[in-house]
Image (cartoon, rainbow, N blue to C red; front, side):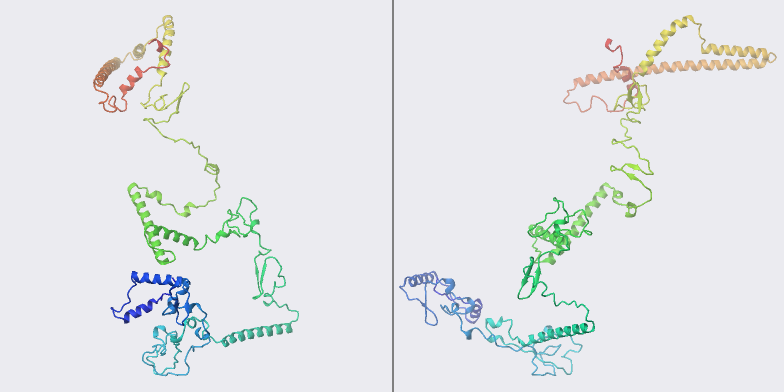
Length: 581
């Protein structure tokens, strides 16, 4: 639309609203009013209706776009106009050459404090909180006499848009003349000192900074230089010849990449060298030094906090973010320490967490010990101990020795029970398998061989015969030597007879005990066989699905009777008569 609708400023609408009554408020355009305005605009474009007229009586082209015909709100137009699009006159641009007075008004001198003035200095143009002078020991409000000048106050009533924003308003170019004169005096003093130095010592070399400004001006075509003719400043973008090129730091082609176009090497060319000793650690070193890492962690924390619903921003609220991060880290450390203490209280082992002091960990001695990569002692005072990859001194199944501690007849076994079966249950010191059989065969063979020899040879006396013969010889010798002492002989004979009777009684008792033991063992074996047969019958009667787990046998250590029964009934693989059974 090019009707040139009036755009009233918001401040003017509010101001008019306060002045007008509630009944006089401007009403909104109805739908009928909008329809009429649209028809008028179309009629103007068609030429059937007269065009709009501005304040100077000029017709406004109805085909002009709305963004050109509408004046901005701050222009203050009261109707359709295109004045804001036309060049302004000289008198309407504002008086930029007008100089408003600034600084102190020295035309008036005040010696007494006035009501409403600054309590510190006594000026009427500002208050105590806006005073720029130093705080006085005796303020102007309580001083008897003061000497103060008021400041010039600029009246902004007649200042337009350009005058209000003129940065050089009321500036006196003569003030800059003082700076130029000061620099000229300094240069004149330098020239005088130079002349005096040359006068005193004509051969002295004067190295001043005067020639540095035009150092490379004559060599304008030199590559890598840029000369600004206005400021006469030389800029070099080449490296110094004495510096080592970045691509020569490490000649390995697999090292840090060097970009020849930008002459940059971001990674560290020598990562093996410590950062303190390296002359060049890459251009990315600056990114990971100083507060950059802390800034990155803070930004990451802000993103995570924002994702969890905490309204915080790194640039808008840095203090709030820092406090939240500190609080979060403290709570995190407290949670870790609490979980650690709970685990230690529940399972124990606090003594393993207490590390020894560094003086013990990093202790140094003069004893030379050389270790291998696996930690074994190769050379030193301590002798290397033979170590195995297997667990040592682990005894299983009631054994007191390990497997392989016993060797007999080409077989390994346990030394504690002399058993050749691996992972068997230890039953104490017993004869090894096959040992009793070998002994039995050897004894039987020896008996068969000794039988014909015994028939041909004289009978060997027994122990009783030997004892009787010794007693008789003793008696004969006693009678021959001591025939006179008959009483002593009788006493000796009575003692010998008593000893013989005691020996006979002991032998009888031993025989009776052996018989009783055999009978007792036979009874126990019969009872065990009967109980096993009964348990088998019961187990057959009971359904296997209802039978409890491990109910067919007792999980207990075997008794001596069971071990003897097992040895007696077991099948021997090395028995030559096994196939005939």
